[in-house]
Length: 362
Image 1 (cartoon, rainbow, N blue to C red):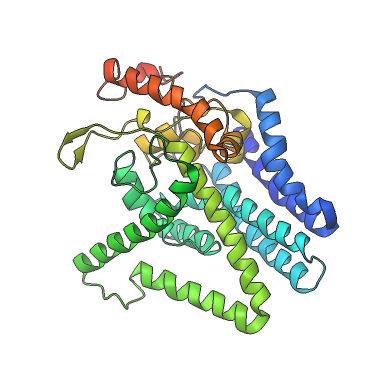
Image 2: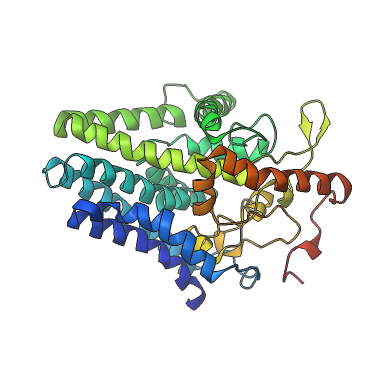
C-alpha cells in the first residue's frame, strides 16, 4: 500500500484546478502554472528514479488500481463544474478561456493517461472506463488506434503517431490526428468484416463512438447552448493536442530497421524514448518508462521497468513539451541525441533485449 501512495500525487492537479476555478481571476492560471512551471522545477530537484523495485510479483494489486478508478468521478465532476461556472457567468472572457484550457490539461495529464493504462487491459469493464474517459475529450477512437495500430507500427513509416527526424511538432500534429482517425477506421472496419458486424451496428466501435459524440454535442447544444458546445470542444482539443505532443516527444526520430519490404524488426525498448524523472512518473503513472511499455504493453504501470541502454530524454515530459514548441530549441536538444543513438544502434545494439540493460533486474 505504501509503495502506491506516490501515484496519488496526480490528484494535486484537479485540486489546483478546482481552487483556481473557484477563486477566478489570475488564479485560473494556477493549473497551467503548476504543470508547465512548477513541475519542471520540482522534478529537477527530486531527480531520477532508476531502480526496478516492485516491478515483479502479482500484476494486479488493488492499491495501485485504486487511484485509477478514483480519478474518473473527479475528472467528470470537475469538467461539469467548470461548465457550470462559465454558463452561470462566474467565469467570463479570458477567465473562461483559461478555465477551458486548464480543464483540458487536467483531462489529458490525468484522464487520457489513465485511459491509456486501462485500454491495454483485458477486462472489458476497464476498457469501458477507458472509453468513457476518452469520450470525455472527444477522442474515443484512440482506444482502437493506439492499441491495435500504434503499438503494431510504432517507429515505422506506417505509424502516424511516430514523429520523424526533422519534423516539427506543428507539422506532426495534423498528420497524427488525421492519420490516427484514418487508421482507427481501417482497423475497426477490418475487425467488423472478419466478425460479420455491420458498419451500422453499435458493435462497430467507430459507429458507436460517433453516435455517442453526436448525442453528447447535440445534448449540450440543445439543452445548454452554443457556449457549452464551445467549452466541451475547447477542453477536448486542448487535451488531444497535449496527448499528441507527448506522442511527438516519446518517439521522435527513432525507427525500426526494415528487414524486408514492408516488414520491420521486432519492437524493442530502444524504439521509444525513456525518461526516469521521479515526479513526472508519479504524476503520469510511469508513462515515461515508455521503452518498457512498448516492449510489453500488457505490463501494468507499477511494474514498468527502467532500462539503461535505451534512448534517454534529458528532462521530463512537461519540460520537453515546452521545448517542442520552439523547433530550433528542440532540434538543438534532440538532434545530437538522435544522431548519437542511431550511430550506437548501428554498431552496438543487440537484436533483442539484453537483461543486463535493465537496471536492478538481476
